[in-house]
Length: 414
Image (cartoon, rainbow, N blue to C red; front, side):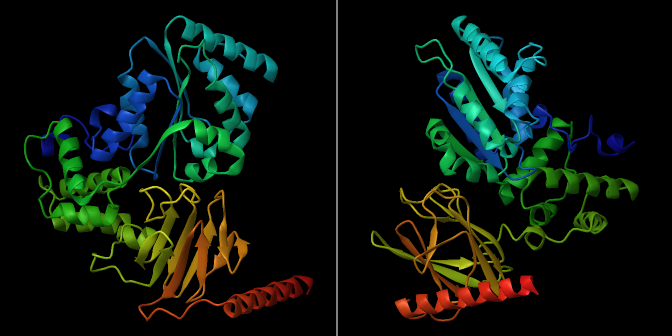
C-alpha cells in the first residue's frame, strides 16, 4: 500500500547499505577514484574517513561490486580485536581455518597465502571497515602485511575506512612508519544543500518514482535538520512519507515534513551537533574569534561558532595551518557561549601555551597558544583584540594553573 500510494517499485530510503542507491556526490566520486587507484597501482594505503552516516559503507559496497575475479579481496569489519584475532579474521576471509594456530603460525600461513596470490598475478586488496577501533598493535600488523610481495611493484593494497578519530590515531608518533606508507587520506564530507536535493531525487528515481514526491520547498528544510548526512536524510524522508501516507496524501509538503520532525523529536542539525554553521549563516551566532599569525603569512581571523573546530595541516580542517610542523589534524577547539576548551589530537609536535606543553586546556579570553610556527589568539565575543601577550601574562597564567592544581589536590585529600 505504501509503495502503491507513491507509485514506487521499492522502498527508496532504507537505512541498510545498498550499492544500487549510491549517490556519487563530488566527494563520493573522489573517494571511489582513490580506492580504485590503490587497487590498480598497488602502491600502499588509502584512508577514507567520514562522520557516522556519511555513506562510507554504501560507497564501499558499491566499490567491491566493481572488482573482477582477478582481485582477491579480504574485508574485515570486526575491529575491536587482538593482533592474533585480526590475523585469524583475514585468513578466514581467504578460506583458511586458522583457529588452532599460534600467532607465529598465523603470520607464516598468511604470508605464504598472500605471496602465492601475488605470484599468480592476482591483485590483493585488504579492506578494513570501522578502522578507528583498531588497536595500535593491530595497525602495526596491517603495516607489515603491506610489505608482502614478490617484487616488481606488486604489493598488498590496503583500504582503511573509519570515523574521523582514525586520523588522530594515524598521526600518533608510534605509527610514523604506517603514516609514511599511506598514499592518500580523504575525508568524506556531508552533502551540500544542493546535493541533498539531488540525493533525494536520485534515490526516488532508483526506487521507480515517475513524478515528484517531495515539493521543492522541503529540500532546504531537510538539509537544515539533517546537515546533509545521508543516513539522517533517509530517516527523515522515510518518516515524512509515512506521515503523508497516513494522511492519504501522495505528495510530501512542508507540513508533513514538520510533522515528521516533531515525531522524531529533532531540533535542527546545528543545535544537535554544533556543526555546519558558517559565518554567512544568519542563524549562526559568533561566540568568539581566533586570530592566526605566523612569520610567513598575513594575519588571518576566523569567527568561532558554537561547536567543534578542527585545526590542522590539510584542507579538510576548519582552520588550515599550512606547515610541516603541523599534524594533519593537530588540535580541536570546542566552543560554547562562555567558554572554549582546547585539546591536542595526539599531534607530533604538540600544543603550547606560555611555553608549556598542554593536552587539554580551558582557554581564557585573550589567551594565546602555539601550534608549530603559528600563534593563535583566542577572543570571546566580538570585542577589540587585546594587547600583546607578555612574559608577565604567561607567568600569571602559570601561577593561576598551579593554584587550581593545588586546590584540586586539597579537595581530593578532603
